[in-house]
Length: 166
Figure 1: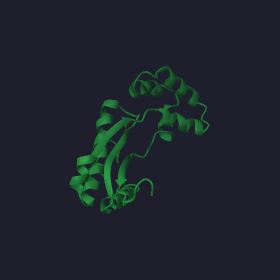
Figure 2: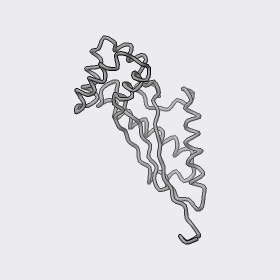
Figure 3: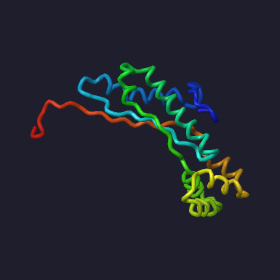
Figure 4: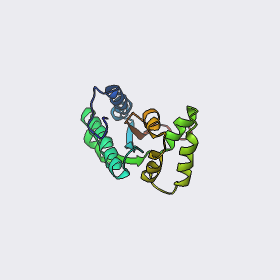
């Protein structure tokens, strides 16, 4: 997704391949007469960068865009729509800290201290403090997620024609 947008651009990055992969995972379950799709959840992490009140609905809209795309490209879309759920959850600053630690960045200690000190606050409070660091521009450039993806999870059951003993 483009920054602050929730419309899917199939030419951006590898969006077409990612969406086709989601479709190829779910389509066989839907076409199998012995399988029943029991749940489908599409979620987007709300970026830690920017206000949580803005990022949360943006993330839900992104998850909804992915669901709409899927429903338009599968058989039995109405049936799937009834069990599908979308959602959003804060990404938090932990992935940024993890990337800094993995890179051996000496400033990761300052970020860790902020996350510890403000652990009971939301991402906005932590972000305010992190942005005050002299290394903020480097953190933003090198460690913030550039990909804006959604994740999907699904479950299904298979009918069996054998007993437990068999």
